[in-house]
Image (cartoon, rainbow, N blue to C red; front, side, top):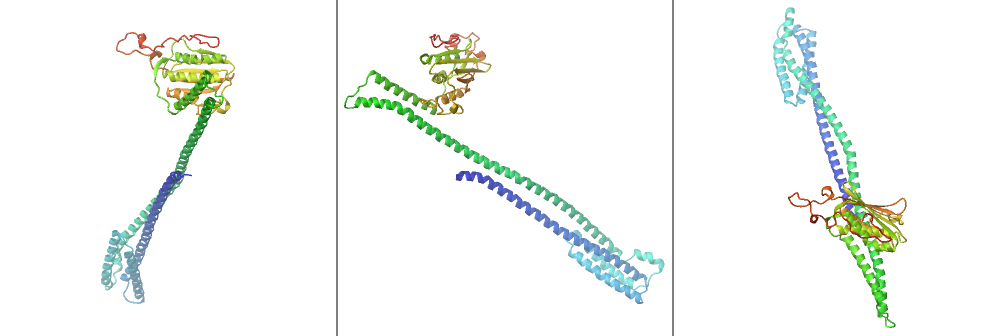
Length: 480
């Protein structure tokens, strides 16, 4: 495999693979970054939530024991026991407050913790004052409950707790969003994989197909070149051999044979054959530009029939030209189209060496002309049927295989089509489709600004009439 093809096939694969790898890398980093942030937020919120709960629990215990201590006598074993509980509650509350300060990261959390500490300091000051007063009367218990020094601490503790609860809810929602995003990313990656595989396969198949087409074209060109060389060698060798033998006979020292009229005719035919072959190769290699003009296609077909009439008479082949009575105009190169008709006629004569019938039928339809060349010969050989119009495809020993190829190119240059097939009853049929002239009603229009009728000088020389080629015993023209 060529290095260029390898580069063309692997470059799209490498590019798509690198893009897919980059997308996966970015997606993995993004997901990992979001998960890390989410994990940190969850740990922070959970710890802050736990600190807020601990603050509330310890605050409720501290409030209860503080209330009991203030309403009970300040002496006795019960009071000492209650004071130890207050001390323990105070220690637990301070520890929870320190934990809350450590996990307070947002400005709002820090503000709530600051308010709790300030309220707690005020509680301690008020408790010292109230603890030295005598216990209140039973009727004042409700008032003491309302004026409990712990109450100012409860409000910031509750706000701190609900704030952390809201943060937990937001973190949960963010976690759900990240989960949805992760699902979409995985789905996208799952779709990108097959799509990239299809693109890679398509690019590789396209590159390989182009390479195969180039290689096939190169092989066809080399094959055509080989066939051309073999054909040239074969075609040139025979006439050159004849010329060489005649020249050697004339130049030999003993009993030389001088050129006579017959030998000059042989040389002339050999040279003409070489000239014809070379001209065929030139027409195939460098086709001349079309010289179009409006003409009656019936006259072109009749001219081609007349050109092969003599050979048809020698082979006892009956020729029939069947065409409509009205002119059939076309914008064509008359000489080259006539050459196509002649080539098809000669091929038909080659297939009927012992006689037969050659029909040339011309019909005009709404937008095209149909020309059929039919014979009763041996038909198209199966070995050349599939490559009938390709160069050097010929079943004749002396044929170059360029005639039909050149004919096809001429017809296609005229915007038409040509095809060949075998007839069910025997023989071959070649069909030519040509576009009608774009002139109105199939006749060329006169130039100029008047509405006068067209004169004879404004029309083609062959408009509306066929040349009278006459008849003989072996060929006839229908409608002449």
